[in-house]
Length: 283
View 1 (cartoon, rainbow, N blue to C red):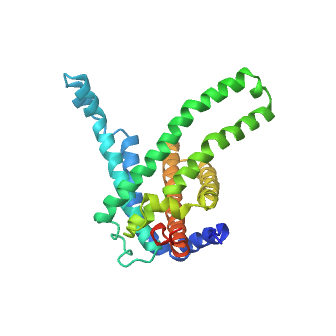
View 2 (cartoon, rainbow, N blue to C red):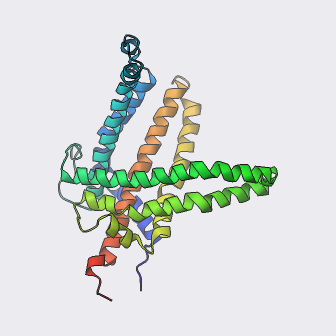
View 3 (tube, one colour):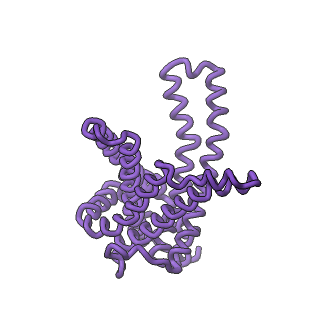
């Protein structure tokens, strides 16, 4: 009988790890989180603006690059920090040696290049899906508006469901198909390529999507609303924009941590319970 991912058990294991190993993963998370918050504050305060140098340039193209290069480099630094943290967290969740300590994430090895390559492909799949959606969703909306579908609340709900079924759900399923390749790259499991990841995920795409969606996005949106409400009431002396930025970063970082944790557990369950394509008997 084909293996089916247990949705509730996998999600529960993820939160059991996050609470039970809080100190271990928070040590890994602290510096990347500080880097993200610091750069966001620097950018929002305009300390990276290259406007003076840009104005002295005779070339519009050079002026454009001078103006935007500091911001680009700043967010590249954030991206690299998150990538290093993700690899270290995968290894911590999967109990690999050398994955604990505040500086365990601060290294670059062959596995990081492999992880980066897989992440670029996953991001490309997601981006293509979003671009296709961005092209066709307005067309669907225009047709629906012309037909008078949007004139009623029921029509709006129906259109939303149709758009989700036509675009959002296929994008999520297609992305989940290759996601097991990420933790595999982090733990240097070279047997699980992108092709093998899709084989491992076969029959469990809906379950993977639900685990990642219900396990991370839903509870963390509630956390964000709660934090926003508390900040609105207690942070009278804090700049509202900065408070909102920090809140957003904290919630997004926590969501990132939860997703990486759940993805690691999904990978382990699939790897332990499904046969690799090369090991399957010939038909």
